[in-house]
Amino acid sequence: MIVVTGGLGFIGSNLIKKLNNKKINDIILVDNIDKNGNYKNLEGLKFNDFYSSNDFLNNIENISNIKYIFHLGACSSTTEMNGDYLYKNNFLYSKKLIDYCSSKKIPITYASSASVYGLGNYGFDEEKRMESPLNLYAASKFLIDNYVISNKFNCSVSGLRFFNVYGPGEKHKGDMKSVIGKFLDNIKSTDSLQLFEGSDNIYRDFIFIDDVCDICMFFLENNFSGLYNVGTGNKNSFMEIYDIINSHLKKIRLEIIPFPKVLNGKYQFNTIANIDKLRKIGYKNNFTKLKDGIINYSKTIKND
Image (cartoon, rainbow, N blue to C red):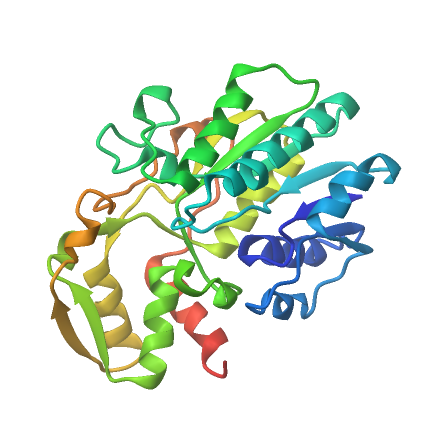
């Protein structure tokens, strides 16, 4: 039995599809159905049972034959200001689940975030000296990462620091959707695209959801422990996204708007994952090129 918490979410639902494609259907899906429409990600998923997040943790002792846990469920809002909620939902829940896995020797992979690096002024290696969380969400991920690297466990525990993931299945995320998803939604109804001033110098390490799921499968098949960056090791500018959309999907007018003063000191201008650690443990797959990922993504949302 494989457990996927956050199984109705963006990464979780795509991971279940990947498992299903590998003929793995013996799955427990854990999540909370919400008003934003995450239930739409149920379409096509094959699994044995469903638990709400709290019910799963309260009843986990009664669930037999758990072989692996993907803990992808969390509050993913970078603008969440309720610190106590983030502490309970992102840190304490994860800590209890990891401790349970250790007691039962169940390997677990959980979702961390590249947001722990803050503005990236110190780089993007999986090292303590480079961590500088900018918001409460990032701090909650920092706390669970710190717990994992500061303690020993009787099972493999791997934290995946996701960079800018994009692709099908993120519609319910609203403002937390990837910038690529927002752009593709925007061009359905308008003939223009707005970019901040200097967008040719705003870079992100964009990674397609299929590649993220492949990395998750790698950890399922190889029980490694530790913190690992999940990105491509390359970066692309926001202007490059516009160029791809304009050249391959739809001719659109570019509107340059001022950079919001409220984001000064709070906005990442340049992210790029150092994936040497991931490569050293044997992950050899190539990554989807940005153009191919955007085109493939666009095909899934034309009729939304």
